[in-house]
Amino acid sequence: MGLLRACADAVLIGAGTLRATPGHQRTPDHVCSQAAPDFAALRRSLRRATQPELVVVTANGDVPTEHPALQASTLVATTVDGARRLDGRLDIPGPTEALGPPAAGLNGEPPW
Image (cartoon, rainbow, N blue to C red; front, side):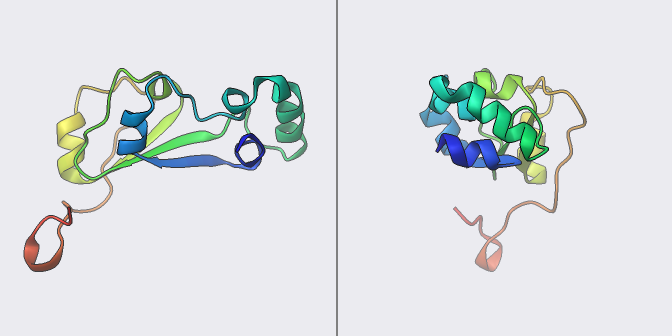
């Protein structure tokens, strides 16, 4: 997992995974701290950023805003409804923007 993250531009997870792993960082170093210098050298040779960006996907905006992974460069991908729920709760640098209309499944029902 550390090698995969060392090669990645981003790590994509769902909000449920974020909630289930308090304190976990999605970085190569967190997986295997002994290999941190090698992971850093690999990322430099691949011309990657220092760490992969974390992308958290949530339909309804239910993310633990105090999670340490959300204190770094993180993109939260959500619906308009999810963005409303998160409005003012996240202290992430950069703009907050909802992508797309509210989630809807068959017959206008929510997909979950």
